[in-house]
Length: 423
Ligand SMILES: Nc1nc2c(c(=O)[nH]1)N[C@H]1C(S)=C(S)[C@@H](COP(=O)(O)OP(=O)(O)OC[C@H]3O[C@@H](n4cnc5c(N)ncnc54)[C@H](O)[C@@H]3O)O[C@H]1N2
Ligand code: MOO
Image (cartoon, helix red, strand yellow):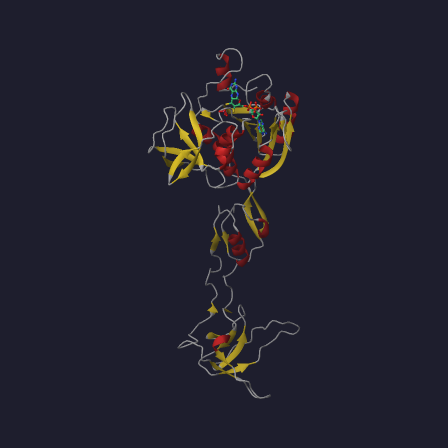
């Protein structure tokens, strides 16, 4: 068992379930959580699997983009001024593709399609709508001239030709390290002739959900509750780059909790537990964390909801975060600890706080800082009517959590806030 500040604080709290005097503020908790993590190593993966991953290294194009001069319109590659003699296309044996002829002589033209390789000597592409090709007698050479629909001077030199390197020179940086790969990045990697891309390994996360009263499906009887964490937390962590490799449910028993922690720690970097953070005899969590050798980084945050949160480091370097069982409390704690920590491991940008203007007078609570779900209306933060630790309605519509100091806030004050992690 590790001895933390709150172990000592427990000693002077009298009998029964103590409300620990928590000294760590939520911003310190956030810092300690992010300091407990470091960015994962990289791995190379096929580009079509890279959506949402974080690039681990600058990606340079293997060749110029585009890498050859091509037509931007269906029509005619022409050389010099018209009218032009039409050359027959050169077709590769057994192929529908026209191949590059050695070159187009001045006064000659050749049919071309969008994206087609422009023959050497081409000075412009005349789009088909603006071309006139009177039919020729068999055996006669066909001529091409500019049609009546063309604009003055058409085809201008270089018109409708995509030039090599227009988008990037060979070797140019096209995706910077640290980019969260989006579909356009994937296309760009393909244009840059890459089959694979180096990305940060995803943080491997496991969950341990506690609570005998929790059911996963259907309508719960009085005394039982529907599980809010199972359907919600893995999906949320995936949004931030985590790979959720498993989840276990344990009843309120010490051996089962120790077992679940041991199993979960064996192959993951982060184990998140929910519930059981209280100090009643039914709460085995602290003992279980101690039993697996977890060194406590903090036990309790001076914040509401989310105060009963514990952060520990396992002997193998994995991080254990114990979230309170109340659904809103767990989310507040998750937003200030787990999300920033996972983002560090995943190589993502740090979680920044925001400053917002308070919309209405908001009462504080003696002795602790509140994190209240709020909504921005006309650029001002209004706290939700649903602030109970077990309530989700306020958070469902919220833009973030507003920091409310013990003395409260007055309309027009500027206050710190943290955005909900899904906007
Ligand atoms: N005497 C005291 N009682 C409590 C204190 C205190 O300081 N002294 N702290 C309160 C605060 S604050 C919180 S937060 C909770 C922390 O509770 P636990 O982490 O011990 O969680 P449980 O007791 O296991 O459950 C609390 C609550 O959450 C519900 N729950 C649990 N798991 C789920 C789930 N997966 N889905 C939905 N709801 C869940 C559970 O049924 C309980 O209602 O303690 C206060 N009490
Ligand atoms: O963390 Mo608890 O009620 O403050 O929900």
